[in-house]
Length: 463
Image (cartoon, rainbow, N blue to C red):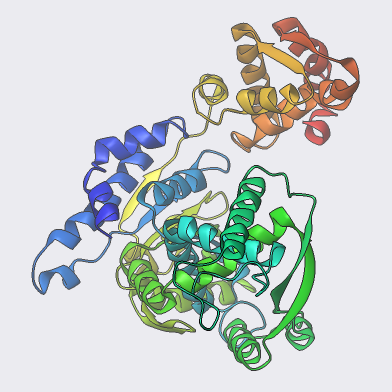
């Protein structure tokens, strides 16, 4: 808690934007908006008294074409803040009364994410102790404590506290075995351990039924799991057994009730829900038919966004202070097509600009996870080193921008298609051509992509 609070205090808006710049190119307005929203959440926690509960988050709606960084900004923001993050697609939900997902599942899923996040953090804290305990259990399996030679001093009736020679010998043998275990010399040995069998055929069958309520299914799973929890003995290699025993010890050391309470608190006060494709449920007044149900989804979403309490299997979760970030391309509709109440719950609107060739050059070179670095790392596993010439990257960016302009603009996702096409032969033949260095030059790019770009009939299908 204190560690997280200290890290949040250091996340000034300028620092947040600086961190986002490492992964997302451009879109300064959107980054500033989410940075201020995140900082305001920390500021609210510092406010004393009843006023703290009255300060509501200022939800954001991002407007821009696909592939310009909307989802990535929200995802990186949540990772930066170590906050529970959930991405949903508005078009997947249906109005109450129709078969499909109900909007309450957003909060249930957010609670699941928060619980997993907190339990993973707690597991990381206790894992060193759990690994030591698992090591002792593994040694017991490899060398059982027999009364003949491995009893601890004083275990036998009438044995002096000083121990016996056989006990000392057993301890020495155990320590030798420990050294062998830690050095990996016992990795080929097999041991038999007890594992929990959580499989339940009934739940598997019910889970595949259309329209099955997810909350009810989750409750059934917990109930049957508690009543019908079985263990089975299984032989595993020592490394796999050590990992399995470590996870069992981790589960014992975690205070699950406290972790759940912290998870609910964090979901309510730090949760971020990214609602993509919000434009797909915007109702154009000039269109009719299925748009009626779209407006119904908006009405169902409204209480969640405004602030309500949803029952989950971990307890009630309030959404009053959850930050909602909506996004949509709004090609066929506009934000004003949303119902007025929904518009009012997203007071901050930012427009993301389409990407041009200069942006693509930066995307291919600046981020830590740039695609050029990713492909270089993939090919390096087969011993092939590729060297990107600056002019080649500019040529590649120009081609991607041209294809976006002449076909559908899918933003930076076009780079995935173009790069895959460019390196297709290398990716296929790399295991067979041996260790060598291959320069990627402008001529190399034009040779493999120039003809496809020139043929406008092929471009929509191949690039």
